[in-house]
Length: 286
Length: 281
Image (cartoon, rainbow over all chains, first blue to last red; front, top):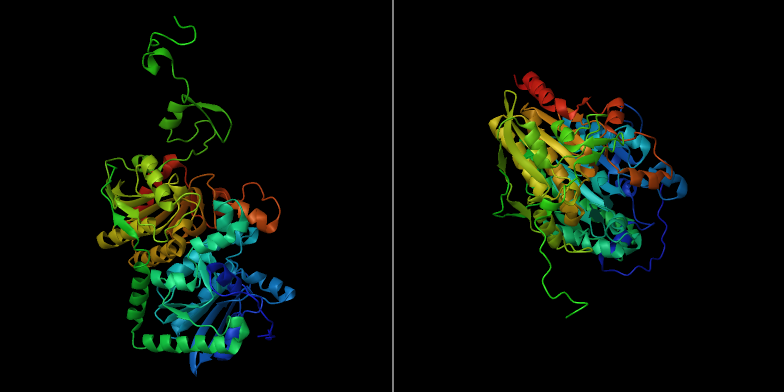
């Protein structure tokens, strides 16, 4: 909420996957709280996981969308150095995922829809995060999100960094902003593994098919939300308005479903993902 | 007469084994205690060092053979990836797959089986580390999900033996979505109160740890296995310091409360049998 928009020119050319990666990480790109303050009213933040700490890289809160109560859970990056450190560069720790699950269960208990905004380079890879069970925290979220009997609408607004993003990403609808990316690995890490050179990230970004335009045909992303001008950084209000329209549409389409149908629909959506195999004849084991 | 070229063909040597005693492979150096161990002693002891208890890695087939007393059936062993992204790095994913299929005799990094453990018919999925680092793409995701569904349909306990570097890069986000797909299936198993035990072996990292490996009714591991979300190299690069001794090993996770037990390989069958007796009577 503390972040103010200032316009800055961006000479980035449109087009390829690498440009989209740059736009997704653009220093002036709207972050979760920038969307939240434009789309929702009466936002009241919920802090802490009731077990260890409050993780500032994940922001959760009660809010109203067009007057109706919703729970918002979002990954939050900082803009200046101080904020970046405070938000841990948008890299959540286990307590962040556990806080989000607590907030989402609260929403489910009172029958409120859940909106999540994904924007993280990845879950934090550090000693303390490992000690407190980073993997376990994400795993539990994946399982528990799949059984919440309320509508869940997911938006990838910037960087969808692998498991760290997916930890809030199991929804009835999964949408991506036009210049957002969503990937199993960062292009830099991918390039470092394949070509032993992080400088080849541009090639990796193309190979990984991580843009919204690449992912929609694969059935992983439902809709691609248009961004104003050269990208969302040019006009935060317009970007937020486009996202709000999609949210309105998604919630309306889920309104008629019963709690059981919501769970089933979400299950079937993910059950179908990755039907990219064929039956071969070489069953060799006995 | 030729001084430099042989006129007559050389005397063909007999088969190799006639002339030499093959000593190679008879002895193994233990990575744990650095002592030399007689290979047959090692194999008799489930590939656990008889001197120090170090657990050597096992391939998926050997694990299943060790786990089941009787013959077992396998399922879905013919599913193969169709390379949805047409991924090419130093070589194409297609040719990488073909090579791996040749060397391992598997179509992907997993064997799905069903057999008896104690009094229970159990579905067991064993990951194959040799197949592109045991990475999980759409085939591994589908095979495990089908095993979960089979457990659900027949009310049979499930065991997943993990050995993996995580999600498979060559299938991009489709691999990542397998985490959600399997975890959702496990939600159904959980709701139906059908036992699921996750066994982590060396190494279990990345997306596999961040999904089904950590979702067992019991999460157990072999001694000394590397288990974590981020790999040690990634963490070292992030924090720019050396990691403490024993970090991310089974015993470390046990100490921090993320494992129910560290179970030596030689006691695994008994442990599973007892646990399923408790859960499924």
